[in-house]
Length: 99
Length: 95
Image (cartoon, rainbow over all chains, first blue to last red; front, side, top):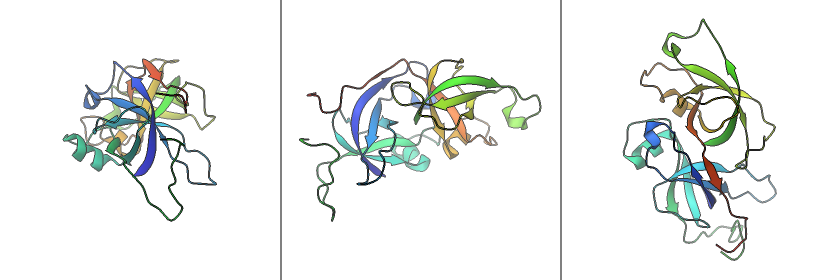
């Protein structure tokens, strides 16, 4: 799982049946200091996350199947939590200021 | 799931039996705005009748292999949706 920031929404009318009526959000992974910014990815929202929220994202198929309550399908990236606070040795490690 | 654009088609007369009737397309990875990221173009199984030039989203890894009802599907990339639009307000802008 990784920490990320919700930066946008994705609209797709035609998609695999596993994704029908699921909210798709654009999430930008928080970079590790000193390393390049990982690319933004599309994640299925299961926790009513919104634009600007700091979230916890799981990127594993079995996790996605459990969280969505469906048999395994072509979905692996799901938002599983809205982060209230992170404490780490490196400090707050917040991806964006003022949030 | 990753952003991509369909940049070509792949035709294989001889292929693994579980792919019979399935389309294979070439996909270039892009950023959310649709600009190429310059990564390697890869082949993906098409589940949503995508066409060359279209913006799509793609799942890679084992989840591509469970996309078909036939469990014997060796795909490592699958196109699972057509992107209509992406709304990404500028980072740092007031919500």
